[in-house]
Image 1 (cartoon, one colour):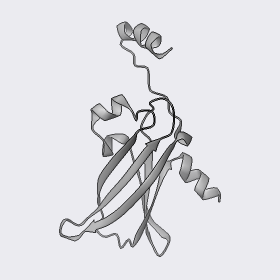
Image 2 (cartoon, helix red, strand yellow; image 1 turned 60 degrees about the vertical axis):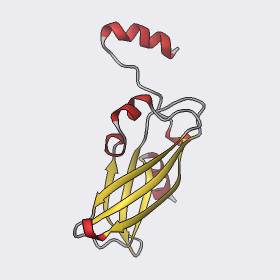
Image 3 (cartoon, rainbow, N blue to C red; image 1 turned 90 degrees about the vertical axis):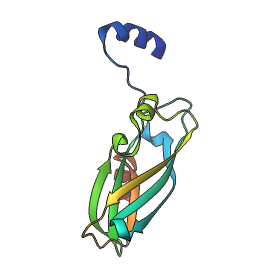
Length: 128
């Protein structure tokens, strides 16, 4: 039905958003390393859409930790880790998307991190 809704919406100037089913998106892998000269952390992650349809990119929650204790949290919106064209097209069915995010870590003595899909995976892991 999406093409029909888009056809009706186009003259009215409205937009039909892509579906959002975070339980069908996974963070397949992630790593973070620091870049001391620039005082940044570099986060690399790989998202996979297990749905049979394209969907919106998720928000990601990044928590910097030290000895397992949270120091600071930040929610990364798709606009912070993707180009606008990719956001509009969404994460294709069965597709993977590699992300690279530079995080200013000035004054944060972090030794680790946690990354989850916000709020879906973050709430789930907090209950466990």
